[in-house]
Picture 1 (cartoon, helix red, strand yellow):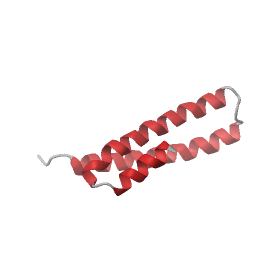
Picture 2 (tube, rainbow, N blue to C red):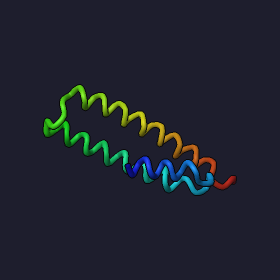
Picture 3 (tube, rainbow, N blue to C red):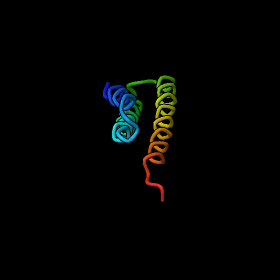
Length: 79
């Protein structure tokens, strides 16, 4: 829920204000990955579910990384 909240907030802010919320979302997704690994290693979820969830979470991470990179470029001073 915190990831969705941060992304919803970022989507309505001005470009120069989005970056902290996107970075927060990236941290939350990374935390989610750790929890998913813990579930898998403790055999709390089976391999098929782990793989399915991991692929989706990785895709979200890639999208957030792209958004983060784009915002950094747009917000960097032109030298």
